[in-house]
Length: 286
Image 1 (cartoon, rainbow, N blue to C red):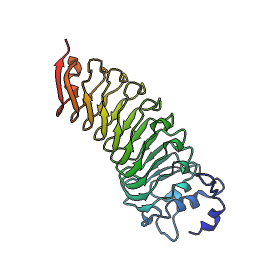
Image 2 (tube, helix red, strand yellow):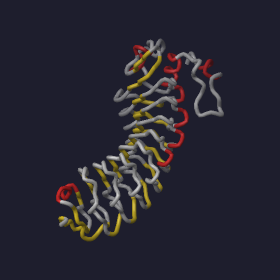
Image 3 (spheres, one colour):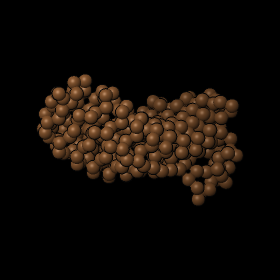
Image 4 (spheres, helix red, strand yellow):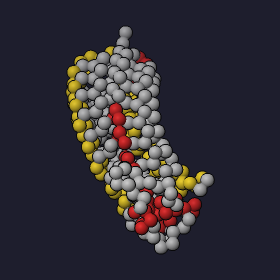
Protein backbone atom coordinates (compact mmCIF):
# COMPACT_ATOMS: atom_id res chain seq x y z
CA UNK A 1 0.00 0.00 0.00
CA UNK A 2 2.98 2.32 0.33
CA UNK A 3 2.83 2.99 -3.43
CA UNK A 4 -0.88 3.71 -3.62
CA UNK A 5 -0.65 7.50 -3.75
CA UNK A 6 1.96 7.33 -6.48
CA UNK A 7 -0.20 5.03 -8.59
CA UNK A 8 -3.21 7.30 -8.58
CA UNK A 9 -1.40 9.65 -10.96
CA UNK A 10 -0.70 6.78 -13.36
CA UNK A 11 -4.31 5.87 -13.97
CA UNK A 12 -6.00 7.12 -17.13
CA UNK A 13 -9.68 6.25 -16.71
CA UNK A 14 -10.30 6.52 -20.46
CA UNK A 15 -7.94 3.60 -21.18
CA UNK A 16 -8.19 -0.07 -20.40
CA UNK A 17 -4.63 -0.13 -19.14
CA UNK A 18 -2.89 2.31 -16.81
CA UNK A 19 0.36 4.08 -17.76
CA UNK A 20 2.94 1.93 -16.02
CA UNK A 21 6.19 2.67 -17.80
CA UNK A 22 7.39 5.27 -15.30
CA UNK A 23 6.69 3.11 -12.24
CA UNK A 24 9.18 0.72 -10.57
CA UNK A 25 8.51 -2.93 -11.35
CA UNK A 26 8.83 -3.74 -7.65
CA UNK A 27 5.94 -1.39 -6.96
CA UNK A 28 3.87 -2.78 -9.81
CA UNK A 29 4.29 -6.35 -8.64
CA UNK A 30 3.29 -5.43 -5.10
CA UNK A 31 0.09 -3.92 -6.50
CA UNK A 32 -0.61 -7.04 -8.58
CA UNK A 33 -0.84 -9.13 -5.40
CA UNK A 34 -2.46 -6.49 -3.20
CA UNK A 35 -5.76 -8.40 -3.24
CA UNK A 36 -4.21 -11.77 -2.33
CA UNK A 37 -5.04 -12.78 1.23
CA UNK A 38 -1.96 -14.98 1.66
CA UNK A 39 0.53 -13.02 -0.42
CA UNK A 40 3.35 -14.08 1.91
CA UNK A 41 3.50 -17.29 -0.14
CA UNK A 42 4.92 -15.17 -2.95
CA UNK A 43 6.77 -12.21 -1.48
CA UNK A 44 7.67 -13.28 2.05
CA UNK A 45 7.08 -10.67 4.75
CA UNK A 46 3.97 -8.71 3.80
CA UNK A 47 5.16 -5.53 5.51
CA UNK A 48 8.66 -5.74 3.99
CA UNK A 49 8.33 -7.72 0.75
CA UNK A 50 11.43 -9.29 -0.72
CA UNK A 51 12.92 -7.88 -3.91
CA UNK A 52 10.98 -9.28 -6.86
CA UNK A 53 14.07 -11.21 -7.97
CA UNK A 54 13.50 -13.34 -4.87
CA UNK A 55 9.75 -13.77 -5.25
CA UNK A 56 8.40 -17.26 -5.79
CA UNK A 57 7.86 -18.06 -9.45
CA UNK A 58 9.07 -14.72 -10.82
CA UNK A 59 11.68 -14.64 -13.59
CA UNK A 60 13.54 -11.36 -14.07
CA UNK A 61 15.72 -10.58 -17.08
CA UNK A 62 17.60 -7.28 -17.46
CA UNK A 63 15.74 -5.95 -14.41
CA UNK A 64 12.34 -6.66 -15.98
CA UNK A 65 9.77 -9.30 -15.05
CA UNK A 66 9.23 -11.64 -18.02
CA UNK A 67 7.60 -14.73 -16.48
CA UNK A 68 5.24 -15.13 -13.52
CA UNK A 69 4.50 -18.73 -12.55
CA UNK A 70 2.24 -19.00 -9.53
CA UNK A 71 0.58 -22.27 -10.50
CA UNK A 72 -0.53 -24.39 -7.54
CA UNK A 73 0.51 -21.88 -4.87
CA UNK A 74 -2.79 -22.14 -2.94
CA UNK A 75 -3.35 -18.42 -3.43
CA UNK A 76 -6.64 -16.92 -2.26
CA UNK A 77 -8.20 -13.62 -3.26
CA UNK A 78 -7.95 -11.42 -6.35
CA UNK A 79 -5.15 -10.30 -8.64
CA UNK A 80 -4.96 -6.79 -10.07
CA UNK A 81 -3.88 -7.65 -13.60
CA UNK A 82 -3.95 -4.01 -14.70
CA UNK A 83 -0.69 -3.52 -12.77
CA UNK A 84 1.23 -6.29 -14.51
CA UNK A 85 4.53 -4.92 -15.85
CA UNK A 86 4.45 -4.41 -19.60
CA UNK A 87 7.47 -6.72 -19.91
CA UNK A 88 5.57 -9.85 -18.79
CA UNK A 89 5.40 -12.48 -21.55
CA UNK A 90 4.01 -15.49 -19.65
CA UNK A 91 1.54 -15.34 -16.75
CA UNK A 92 0.53 -18.60 -15.07
CA UNK A 93 -1.73 -18.72 -12.00
CA UNK A 94 -3.56 -22.01 -12.47
CA UNK A 95 -4.93 -24.27 -9.75
CA UNK A 96 -5.39 -21.67 -7.02
CA UNK A 97 -8.46 -20.18 -5.31
CA UNK A 98 -8.52 -16.92 -7.24
CA UNK A 99 -11.63 -14.86 -7.96
CA UNK A 100 -12.43 -11.77 -9.98
CA UNK A 101 -12.94 -10.90 -13.64
CA UNK A 102 -10.64 -10.74 -16.66
CA UNK A 103 -10.33 -7.33 -18.29
CA UNK A 104 -8.69 -8.18 -21.60
CA UNK A 105 -7.79 -4.57 -22.31
CA UNK A 106 -5.73 -4.34 -19.12
CA UNK A 107 -3.25 -7.06 -20.10
CA UNK A 108 0.31 -6.21 -21.16
CA UNK A 109 0.51 -5.82 -24.93
CA UNK A 110 3.62 -8.02 -25.11
CA UNK A 111 2.12 -10.98 -23.25
CA UNK A 112 2.19 -14.27 -25.17
CA UNK A 113 0.57 -16.81 -22.86
CA UNK A 114 -1.93 -16.66 -20.00
CA UNK A 115 -2.93 -19.63 -17.86
CA UNK A 116 -5.82 -19.00 -15.43
CA UNK A 117 -7.22 -22.52 -15.31
CA UNK A 118 -8.81 -24.16 -12.26
CA UNK A 119 -9.82 -21.04 -10.35
CA UNK A 120 -13.10 -19.17 -9.80
CA UNK A 121 -12.90 -16.27 -12.25
CA UNK A 122 -16.31 -14.97 -13.35
CA UNK A 123 -17.86 -12.75 -15.98
CA UNK A 124 -17.29 -12.44 -19.72
CA UNK A 125 -14.10 -12.20 -21.77
CA UNK A 126 -13.81 -9.62 -24.54
CA UNK A 127 -11.76 -11.69 -26.98
CA UNK A 128 -11.39 -8.69 -29.27
CA UNK A 129 -9.39 -6.76 -26.67
CA UNK A 130 -6.73 -9.41 -26.09
CA UNK A 131 -3.13 -8.46 -26.94
CA UNK A 132 -2.56 -8.79 -30.67
CA UNK A 133 0.48 -11.07 -30.40
CA UNK A 134 -0.95 -13.54 -27.88
CA UNK A 135 -0.38 -17.24 -28.58
CA UNK A 136 -2.04 -19.09 -25.69
CA UNK A 137 -5.18 -18.39 -23.61
CA UNK A 138 -6.09 -21.02 -21.02
CA UNK A 139 -9.13 -20.30 -18.84
CA UNK A 140 -10.42 -23.83 -18.28
CA UNK A 141 -12.53 -24.76 -15.27
CA UNK A 142 -13.59 -21.35 -14.04
CA UNK A 143 -17.05 -19.75 -13.91
CA UNK A 144 -16.68 -17.49 -16.92
CA UNK A 145 -19.83 -16.66 -18.87
CA UNK A 146 -21.21 -14.70 -21.78
CA UNK A 147 -20.73 -15.18 -25.50
CA UNK A 148 -17.58 -16.21 -27.33
CA UNK A 149 -16.78 -14.06 -30.37
CA UNK A 150 -14.15 -16.45 -31.69
CA UNK A 151 -13.64 -14.43 -34.86
CA UNK A 152 -12.16 -11.66 -32.69
CA UNK A 153 -9.33 -13.80 -31.32
CA UNK A 154 -5.80 -12.55 -32.10
CA UNK A 155 -4.53 -13.84 -35.41
CA UNK A 156 -1.42 -15.26 -33.73
CA UNK A 157 -3.32 -17.43 -31.24
CA UNK A 158 -2.46 -21.13 -31.37
CA UNK A 159 -4.25 -22.42 -28.24
CA UNK A 160 -7.58 -21.50 -26.63
CA UNK A 161 -8.83 -23.71 -23.80
CA UNK A 162 -12.21 -22.78 -22.30
CA UNK A 163 -13.39 -26.19 -21.05
CA UNK A 164 -15.63 -26.27 -18.00
CA UNK A 165 -17.09 -22.76 -17.95
CA UNK A 166 -20.54 -21.25 -18.49
CA UNK A 167 -20.13 -19.67 -21.92
CA UNK A 168 -23.38 -19.58 -23.91
CA UNK A 169 -24.83 -18.67 -27.28
CA UNK A 170 -23.71 -19.68 -30.75
CA UNK A 171 -20.13 -19.76 -32.04
CA UNK A 172 -18.75 -18.93 -35.47
CA UNK A 173 -16.01 -21.40 -36.40
CA UNK A 174 -15.52 -19.96 -39.90
CA UNK A 175 -13.30 -17.04 -38.86
CA UNK A 176 -10.90 -18.62 -36.40
CA UNK A 177 -7.27 -17.43 -36.30
CA UNK A 178 -5.21 -18.96 -39.09
CA UNK A 179 -2.57 -20.02 -36.55
CA UNK A 180 -4.99 -21.92 -34.30
CA UNK A 181 -3.90 -25.48 -33.47
CA UNK A 182 -5.99 -26.36 -30.39
CA UNK A 183 -9.53 -25.23 -29.53
CA UNK A 184 -11.33 -26.66 -26.50
CA UNK A 185 -14.93 -25.59 -25.84
CA UNK A 186 -15.95 -28.74 -23.97
CA UNK A 187 -18.56 -28.60 -21.21
CA UNK A 188 -20.09 -25.16 -21.63
CA UNK A 189 -23.63 -24.05 -22.54
CA UNK A 190 -22.99 -23.27 -26.19
CA UNK A 191 -25.79 -23.82 -28.68
CA UNK A 192 -26.84 -23.51 -32.31
CA UNK A 193 -25.35 -25.11 -35.39
CA UNK A 194 -21.64 -25.27 -36.23
CA UNK A 195 -19.83 -25.01 -39.55
CA UNK A 196 -16.79 -27.29 -39.75
CA UNK A 197 -15.95 -26.79 -43.42
CA UNK A 198 -13.87 -23.61 -43.00
CA UNK A 199 -11.61 -24.46 -40.08
CA UNK A 200 -7.97 -23.27 -40.06
CA UNK A 201 -5.74 -25.59 -42.06
CA UNK A 202 -3.37 -26.15 -39.14
CA UNK A 203 -6.08 -27.04 -36.59
CA UNK A 204 -5.28 -30.38 -34.95
CA UNK A 205 -7.56 -30.55 -31.88
CA UNK A 206 -11.19 -29.47 -31.61
CA UNK A 207 -13.44 -30.30 -28.65
CA UNK A 208 -17.11 -29.34 -28.91
CA UNK A 209 -18.43 -32.06 -26.60
CA UNK A 210 -20.97 -31.64 -23.80
CA UNK A 211 -22.67 -28.51 -25.07
CA UNK A 212 -26.10 -27.93 -26.63
CA UNK A 213 -25.16 -27.81 -30.30
CA UNK A 214 -27.79 -28.81 -32.85
CA UNK A 215 -28.18 -29.35 -36.57
CA UNK A 216 -26.27 -31.37 -39.12
CA UNK A 217 -22.55 -32.15 -39.18
CA UNK A 218 -20.52 -31.74 -42.37
CA UNK A 219 -17.23 -33.57 -41.82
CA UNK A 220 -16.18 -33.73 -45.47
CA UNK A 221 -13.69 -30.84 -45.36
CA UNK A 222 -11.87 -31.10 -42.06
CA UNK A 223 -8.31 -29.74 -41.86
CA UNK A 224 -5.68 -32.18 -43.16
CA UNK A 225 -3.81 -32.28 -39.85
CA UNK A 226 -6.88 -32.81 -37.67
CA UNK A 227 -6.05 -35.51 -35.11
CA UNK A 228 -8.82 -35.15 -32.50
CA UNK A 229 -12.44 -34.08 -32.92
CA UNK A 230 -14.80 -34.50 -29.98
CA UNK A 231 -18.44 -33.73 -30.78
CA UNK A 232 -20.22 -36.07 -28.37
CA UNK A 233 -23.05 -35.32 -25.96
CA UNK A 234 -24.75 -32.66 -28.03
CA UNK A 235 -27.94 -32.75 -30.13
CA UNK A 236 -26.50 -33.07 -33.62
CA UNK A 237 -28.95 -34.82 -35.92
CA UNK A 238 -29.34 -36.35 -39.36
CA UNK A 239 -26.85 -38.52 -41.14
CA UNK A 240 -23.16 -37.76 -41.63
CA UNK A 241 -20.59 -38.49 -44.35
CA UNK A 242 -17.44 -40.06 -42.88
CA UNK A 243 -15.87 -41.10 -46.17
CA UNK A 244 -13.52 -38.12 -46.41
CA UNK A 245 -11.98 -37.92 -42.95
CA UNK A 246 -8.37 -36.69 -42.69
CA UNK A 247 -5.87 -39.52 -42.72
CA UNK A 248 -4.10 -38.28 -39.57
CA UNK A 249 -7.25 -38.59 -37.47
CA UNK A 250 -6.69 -40.40 -34.17
CA UNK A 251 -10.14 -40.00 -32.63
CA UNK A 252 -13.57 -38.81 -33.77
CA UNK A 253 -16.22 -38.96 -31.05
CA UNK A 254 -19.86 -38.64 -32.11
CA UNK A 255 -21.38 -40.43 -29.11
CA UNK A 256 -24.58 -39.25 -27.45
CA UNK A 257 -26.10 -37.43 -30.43
CA UNK A 258 -29.25 -37.89 -32.53
CA UNK A 259 -27.30 -38.95 -35.62
CA UNK A 260 -28.57 -41.89 -37.67
CA UNK A 261 -27.93 -43.96 -40.77
CA UNK A 262 -25.08 -45.97 -42.23
CA UNK A 263 -21.62 -44.41 -42.29
CA UNK A 264 -18.80 -45.73 -44.44
CA UNK A 265 -15.30 -45.42 -42.99
CA UNK A 266 -11.90 -46.41 -44.36
CA UNK A 267 -10.22 -49.40 -42.74
CA UNK A 268 -7.39 -47.22 -41.41
CA UNK A 269 -9.78 -44.95 -39.52
CA UNK A 270 -12.56 -47.40 -38.65
CA UNK A 271 -11.58 -47.89 -35.00
CA UNK A 272 -10.92 -44.16 -34.51
CA UNK A 273 -14.62 -43.33 -34.88
CA UNK A 274 -16.84 -43.68 -31.80
CA UNK A 275 -20.62 -43.73 -32.32
CA UNK A 276 -22.03 -45.18 -29.09
CA UNK A 277 -25.49 -43.93 -28.07
CA UNK A 278 -26.36 -42.83 -31.59
CA UNK A 279 -28.27 -44.57 -34.39
CA UNK A 280 -25.24 -44.60 -36.66
CA UNK A 281 -24.17 -47.92 -38.15
CA UNK A 282 -20.48 -48.19 -39.01
CA UNK A 283 -19.55 -49.89 -42.28
CA UNK A 284 -16.15 -50.58 -43.82
CA UNK A 285 -15.62 -48.60 -46.97
CA UNK A 286 -15.21 -50.83 -50.02
